[in-house]
Length: 184
Image (tube, rainbow, N blue to C red; front, side, top):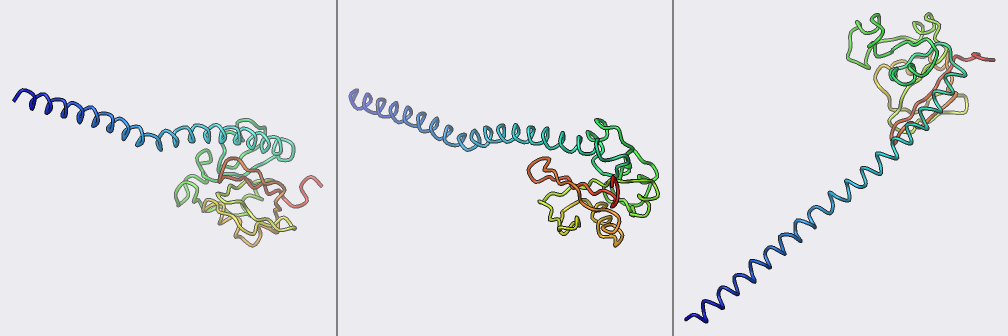
């Protein structure tokens, strides 16, 4: 009878140990995709930071050299690090735009209004790689509603031409449009 108990105890101990090992292995395998994703996210985060640093610096240098009065939604870094007049198309820092009907980045603004303010450069963002024709006209872009409305106005491409496209981060480009004849 005691031999039977000993065999049962030994069998249970072995099964318990095997279950613990299986549990540890299962836990490790379950974590592996998350660990891989975590490492991948850290690498991607570093790549995004480098991309933003390079793209942001390139854009800042271009604007510093070629722009005097810029209209854009993303006013933060670019306006802080540069010495040009800013028209905030989102209206956060411009009450005359901010009080208008519409959500953030959806304010109604016209090309004529920008020209009356002396804007010589328009910076819009795109979440897809923009397509520009050989005459400096935007042919395809995925931008905020305010930017899309501006670019869809008939006078937009009549008064502004694309002079620079900068990839700021994965799936994030800046398109610089300058007043035709500006700097000539």
